[in-house]
Image (cartoon, rainbow, N blue to C red; front, side):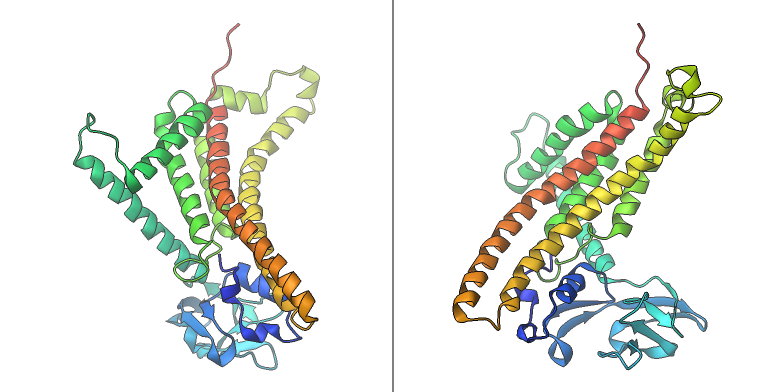
Length: 340
């Protein structure tokens, strides 16, 4: 994640240093990939801008936007477009003050593409090893062995118990969820390109993952699943004439994927924000006495190391929890009634 001391510049030591701005800058999405520095001396990777304005579709590089905002808080660019730096549209591309249809390759999207490419390389490399071996050959070691260990753990300990009978059909999707989330989380711990992206801390990404699980659950539901929603085995007065329990069960269809989305998003975003906030302590005490600076800086470094170690564990736990809950939801939609 881009939450380390490397991302903070000497200018941050000034008295006007704002920890809030630094934290928000490192967890939000942007049209450029900030690597180092500030202002004219900053190192920034420009990204493609793809927008549809009143004058049609435009494709250009984000470096064509001005580095600094004008008096109206806009970073002016070509075709009458600008990036708003304040207000409700802060960070968005606007035309005459109104947002436009933006399909740009933002930092989050760019990092996600890199993560997907890296994940594909790792999986295909492991698959290539198995193509050249027989089932009777010794188990692989090294990186391939590590991948096999993860796959076997997820299948045997998460997918199979959660989904139950017929779990094989859902294994590819659930394994994809686990490895995609795990890869994005781990890459987010790297404070410089190709890492530093807050992919799973972006609610649009977690929304799509939760939506995929939602659709699979609904299309996998059997008759018993739908019966338990619209006509559950409860006293009649709880479901007719006022359908109290059916309404509650129907709402539960949507609260489950909502919980998946918020759980992953909130945990990863909070971890990023806390880590960079702890680092900001060093600069917040920069104007204090030397003793205060040394003590608080040492405390900040120790706490940052602790947070990074904790984040390494959280990377795995969050991927595991999302996969486990998805498997459980799918399994509940396919459960058969018990015959007494």
